[in-house]
Amino acid sequence: MAASDAREPLPQFPRDFLWGVSTSAHQIEGAVDERGPSVWDAFTAVSGRVKDGTTAAVACDHYHRYREDVALVGELGAGAYRFSVSWPRVLPGGSGEVNTAGLDFYDRLVDELCAAGVSPVPTLFHWDTPLALDGEGERESGGGWLRRDTAERFAEYAAVVAGRIGDRAKKWITLNEPAEHTLLGHALGQHAPGKQLMFDALPVAHHQLLAHGLAVRALRAAGVTDIGIANSHGPTWPASASPEDVQAADFYDVLLNRLFADPLILGRYPDFIGQLLSATTGDVEADLKVITEPIDWYGINFYQPTKVGAPLPAAAGPTEFSGLTLPPELPFSVREIEGRAVTDFGWPVVPESLTELLTGFRDRYGDRLPPLVITENGCSYEGLDDQRRIDYLDGHVRAVHQALAEGVDVRGYFVWSLMDNFEWAEGYRQRFGLVHVDYETLERTPKASYAWLREALRAQRA
Ligand code: FCB
Image 1: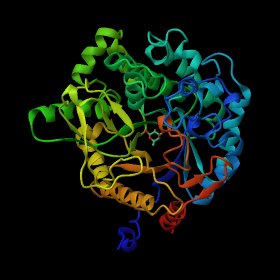
Image 2: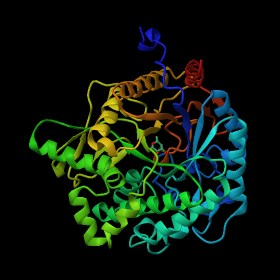
Image 3: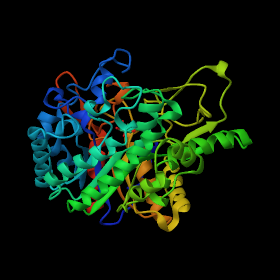
Image 4: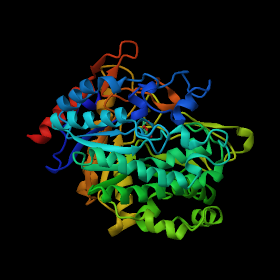
């Protein structure tokens, strides 16, 4: 019997627990000619960088079809919709002149959501830096997030957006997954802007954190009172008890789980990161005062745990992990988690590791930890009859409930994603949606998982 056939109804969550669905601008909006260019436009224009050779020029054409998409969120019964605002759509040059039509779009989107009874949850940055800020010609040397100045520009942009939709959007997210943007975009070069700086990418982490802190101040000045950040996290499991494997796993844990959370929550960097940064990046201590500007909650994007071991011999060559190619010179190697089902993306399905992550956060940060919100969780599977997505979501929602039962303060859960979309370097090959999108006709078709979630949310309200 399939696990799902025997499934009990989901346990009841607190009344005010926030259920939502997530998307991001570059992955769904399209309408590329109606905004300024971003680093992702430049990146995807280079052949070979996106695995199926596609771009997000049209994507789901959400920019023109948002009413239909908001209706789908409303019919689902979700309490909240997390979307991102495209910085180059609002400020095509990165700063200065506002594209009124772009800002009007978010204004209409927010109105439409409110009319459907759905809380708008804007994210200010989901990786689509205006190309103008990345600095043509200084690509490798010092544009974009390598520059401290970009953090200041970001705060200005935050003020512009909050000035327009802050009256109706109550819950805000500054940045999405700065760790991925640093590691994939600037260290390994497998996401935009395609820089391969390895550890010289560290200032990108610091400047994003600074941008977050400055944006929190700008949002508060605009009257916003409910602010978080969305970071990607997952338990890191050493491949064995050997000191080499444990050391490599600790190192990976710092990069994924502590590089951003420690400064945000504790006001300090993990030791060796702080030393590296101080050597290159000005007055880190003074910046940390901005970075620890209090937030109202902390967002966790969760997909999978990672098993990590000591580096493999260079002769083993690069390894593949989660769609990435990891070079052998990294001080760790990622190992297969055996005996687990995997998604179409090859990511292992380990729901109970979400409970482990959440209780681990509570144990690590104690009283300093703000309330948590799961800002993304989901999986890539083909097909409309997506029973495996139902199983995945069911398992992970139960894992969140278990964390609640163990005393962790979790306030919400957002599914990634409302609909199939442009999955970065994978192009359209990975489908994460509750709603299927036909990329030829742009027709939206709810999948079995959409119907399942609608019923589950109805039962939560009963
Ligand atoms: C996260 C990203 C999101 C999406 C999911 C699958 O890392 O934030 O945009 O790509 O993974």
